Amino acid sequence: MSLTITKFIAKGLDTLIQGEPVAILLHGYGADERDLPDLMSSLPKLPWVSLRAPLSLESEGFAWYPISQSLKPLESDVRHVTESVWNWIDDYLPEDSDLILIGFSQGALMATQLLRSRPERIKATVILAGFMFDGAMPGDESLLKTKPKVIYCRGLNDQLIPKEAIANLNSWLQTHTKSATKTYPGLGHSIDQRVIDDVSVYLAGQLGKSS
Image (cartoon, rainbow, N blue to C red):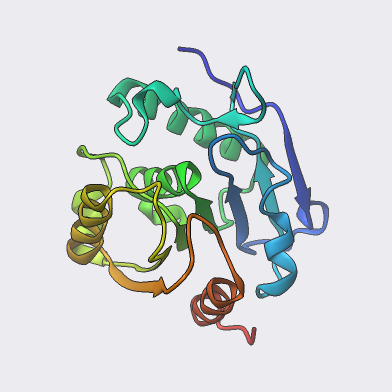
């Protein structure tokens, strides 16, 4: 499978200071690069880019991998799309810019993929209503030693992510990261102000900024 990131929107990349972190926004299934940028107005100020997933859907929107695999994608699909995102990053972002990953649902899987493949590039990871690829990745051994701080936010009324996927992600986070897991009564497969507030506090701590 040949995948290429061709569309994105960004803010602050043209005035990027050497070594300044950059947020990478990774939307969910059926959405596009316009889905998450509104979050940035409520989070600590930093340059950001929102990528469009490479697979166009027949109905509308885009996906990171074929939905036929749902929450259990094929290893080959995950590997190829992860490589395509890293290729975009290598082409467009400086090597000395650490990355802030913010992913929702299928995009949250992509956030964990980037963390698990090149953990040394990642400054912070935000997992929103997410799940993960259930297989080994090159950076897993390194993460067992470094255990970076990650935030995982999910609604208690989320009907799209099954308990098995939640348990799998929580188990991995507990062994490979210092995870702050936040749950929200009444919230489904979505993001609300409670989530935004918690993410803002987490990022402020990771960046050493006031939110």
